[in-house]
Length: 109
View (cartoon, rainbow, N blue to C red):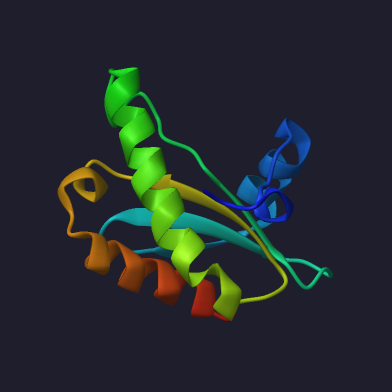
């Protein structure tokens, strides 16, 4: 579970990251990244109904992606991140998800 200080919430801030952030795409998800003045990484995961119409499946994808990022989040600083997983992230091996999360957090944009 992502710590409270690392959660990104609020429509206004999430909308700002989506509209002004730079994009980063991997095999299992795409990210919008916006540099921040704070030293912490704040992130959220958004799964569209296009990925799956079933809430159970969308929630499982969110949990997997959050955990992958949570394990890697200590290595980065000063970013706001919105993650958009695709259907492949449900069946992907967890170590691959963690590798992709690490790449996303190490990206300098």
